[in-house]
Image (tube, rainbow over all chains, first blue to last red; front, side, top):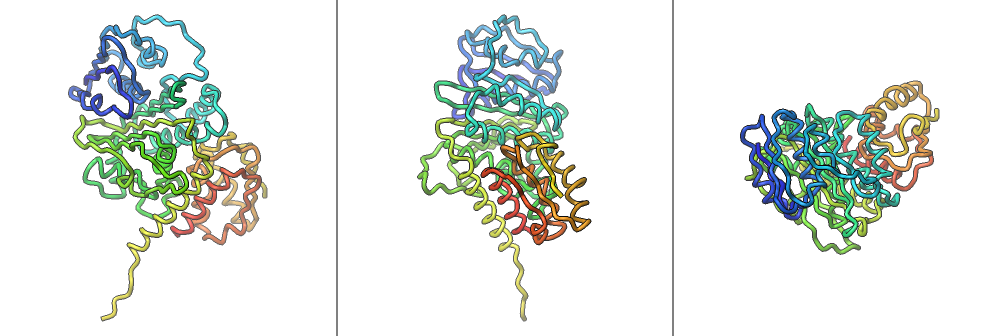
Length: 321
Length: 95
């Protein structure tokens, strides 16, 4: 496999970076980078870290980085997590208020501890922290419960002062959304599987409305809803497909959530290099953080309406002949 | 019977494994003994939908929605109340 760290890769312009990913020869990883400047979303680092952990340190070849911003990769803990030498020397700064370095989460307790430790690092107001905690918990638990990845969830996040935004990336190298969803539903393509995974009340664990004792299929819908209401980017990449929620102008008084993610302003691509597993990236603008409680009302109404509609579709009437 | 959740979970209640343990080891045995239950959320700043689902959805499915007459949710803040409402409403529509 070969992955190139480009000059710029944020959710808004991540498509060329993904297209450039070479997934051939899955037992080796070659990392190359832009020579002058690397400016990337944490989701890019989470992807590279996930690939690196999968192939193992002895199978990683990382070219000597020349970009002036190469220190960022060191500070985000990429080389430390992969146990490879970068040759980059940096003076470690206090990370509070800036970033959450690459972290590997492999079990439930690790996640609980991670969330507890993560909050003080962000130095944010409780109102701003609320959706971030939910996003991290729901995404990482999805990985732990459904991905079957040997390496767990690889997570990183960064606070950007200029845009007052938190950007979060999480990657796994597990079975991917299509295989998970197809355990209970039918999705012929990776994109169709992503669509189902984003639909409220659809889980790979059962076809039953109301889910199992443990899953109901709400987590990704809630996360997409947080992004939509706050007019933030959100992306899911799994198999050969990418779904990207785009920013759209919203009438704040009449915000509507859709159960069908394809009704939201989005872009999609089903011809990307194959990613064995799932990647999720999200931006949370802290200026626009809608009251979480208001958002929860919208989520409840949409969720219940969707179940009612699905039940109506399945409703059988007696046939009189 | 009062179950103080903060003694078991952190102030951000998100660990579904703990929610499941509370349900299996405390809530269901108490309901089987015809006891009323108070889930005390004092000290819980927030909870995920997944946590609340793992805590009560199976109880609603097993005993029917009437079981909510025997379960009280105490000292919930606005966020927690809304998340409980989400789970109760979709379970009510589902069973």
